[in-house]
Every structure is written in structure tokens, then in C-alpha cells.
Length: 416
Image 1 (cartoon, rainbow, N blue to C red):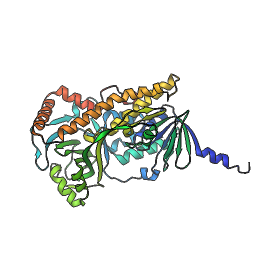
Image 2 (cartoon, helix red, strand yellow):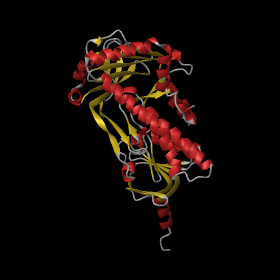
Image 3 (cartoon, rainbow, N blue to C red):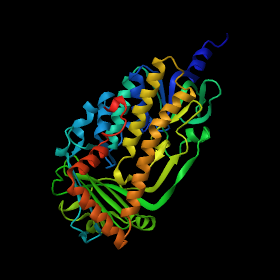
Image 4 (cartoon, one colour):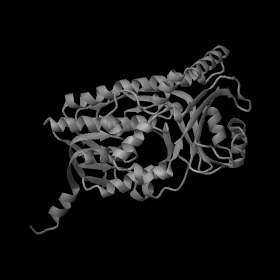
């Protein structure tokens, strides 16, 4: 009674929400927007301060958004605001060779978007553009509460789910969703373990400026140490994802910019003219890491918290956005039936839906990397003949294109 401000302080320290999402990268805000538009109250907790996420400068980090993913972004109101800042992927060319020698076979794969009725197979979009678009949209949505510069230190799922933050704030929710990456604290606190292995490879990621236009063509050049992807960005710019052995990548990453370009040029080739670095350089150790369960008591995992795969097919974010669309549909349908959205059998529907698709993606990316990241002459002959055979059969080539565009399988409603 002597301190009338105390009730106000306590109310600020305790929040009730339908769904608490841990992780404010890309999948977390996408899920928050989808759920909010479905009528749920959502709280998103992110460890980074808002200005860091919102004011990122160009650094070349980009994503290949499959056609199905752009449908989701359109459905949640993001796509219209970013579409003119993305680069359509009109063609994809896949070849096999060695550094400084170019393709070593007449066989290759060539995918052309004109073979798809839906349009481009996907779009390249910078990380900073996506993050800002998600943040702005989430701030404008009254059903979403954003908590920045704070992190979860404890969670309890006995009864209503509860999260305790480092600031001392507490959040009560029906369901906790972990969207906090491969080292997911949400999964760890729920007792979910991971399985997987390293590839002995590290990805070198950087943006490149080049003299000649790329014409919207993405290139995947397979070399014995690992693949080099050259992905078109708006203007005469491309993002490269260059996989090398851990030892070689560490050596290249330590070079200054001039020496780094010196070792990149023989691998990159001269088909785009003179090249120069256009952003910071990043390195990412490559591994396969799959959660042994996608759900636990009042907990669900999405994105890298559930599955991290090799970037050889550029499907990491797309798989996460499929999680977003599937979980939104499962929870919305459960609520319409009057079910507890966090009940075990409800969450099991989401896990069953996503498990097969993720397992297939993991096996495909793992096998592709192992098949192409070597210099065995018999394997080289087999894969080159295989690419030639696929390229010669329009129906098979078109089927692979549709899979890469995310247009096959049991698509959630938000991606149709």
C-alpha cells in the first residue's frame, strides 16, 4: 500500500501469451507473423538489441528463397515490400571440375525457369533486407510482443509453459517454440538431443562485384574439396558460398583481401569479367545436425533448432519456412477443433509432417556433398554421366526443378 508503483512493476515483469517464440532471426519472426494473422497472441524473445538487427549494413549474406517460400512471404505480408530488392534466379547451371581448369566434362545440368509455369525457381535476397522487413512487420502487428536484448535462462513446462529471462521477466504461454539455432537452448532445456556429423569442410561466404552482368544465372561448380556456388544479387553483384576443407579454408580466411581474390579467381573463372570483394568475409563450419525430436512437452522446434543441413542445395532457410507454414496450420486447425494447441498429439502432427521431408533433405544434401566432394575417377565418371542423363530428359529435369522450387510434396496452405 505504501508503494503504488509496485503493481505496475510486477505487471511489466510478467507476460501472458498464447505462444512464446525464442529466437528473433528469420524463422522466428516469420512464424510470429503467420500465427498472429491466424489470431494467436505471440511473444518473440531475441538476445540481440533491436538496432543491431534493424540497421545492419550490406555484407553480402544472402538466401536463395524457393518459389514456395516467396508464397509464404506474400501470405504474411512481407513479399510486396521486398520483391523489387531481390534477384530472380532465371537459370541454374551445375558443372563438375577442378580449380583453375574449369569443367572437366561435357556433361552438366542446366535448369531454365521457362520450363516452370509458376515463374522463377526462386529469388536471391540479402539477409539484412529480410531481417528488417520481418522486424518492421512484427512491430506493426498488435498481436506480437517483441522483447530484444534479453535471453531465456530457464523454462518450465509443468502446467502452463513458463520462461524466465535474464532480466528477471517471466513469460507464461501455452506453447514454447524454439527458433534459436543449432545450439538451441530451448531444445536442450526440453531434453532434446541432436545427431549428426561434421563434413571437415568450412564455407567461405562473401559478396563479389563483377564487370559483366550475371543475367540471373546461378552457378554451382563442384570441385574435389567442396562446391562453389555463385548466386546472383541485384546489379552486377553475386554472393559466393565456397566450401573448402577446414584446413584450407582457415588458411584462405586469414589472407588479406588481395591474396584472397588471388586464390578465388582461378576457381571463380573469368566469365563475369574482373571481380572484387564487395562485403565482409564470413566462415561457417559445415555439418549435419538434426534434433532427435522436433517436439517435447509444450515445446516445438523450427528452423536450425530442428535441423541444420549442408548448404549444397541452398535449402536451409526454405526448410525452416516450411516448418513455419506447417506449424501454423497444425496449431490453427487444432484451435478450430477446440483442442489444447500444446497437447502431445497436436504437436505430434507437426512432427510427423516435417520429419520425413527433413530426413529426405538431409539425406539428399549429405549424399550430394559426398558424391561430388572427391576426385575419385569412377565416381566422377558416374556423376558426370548422371548429370548428362538428367539434362537429356526434360520430364526428369522439370521434376528436379519443381522440387528445388519447393513445389512438390504435401505443401502447407501458406505455401500453395
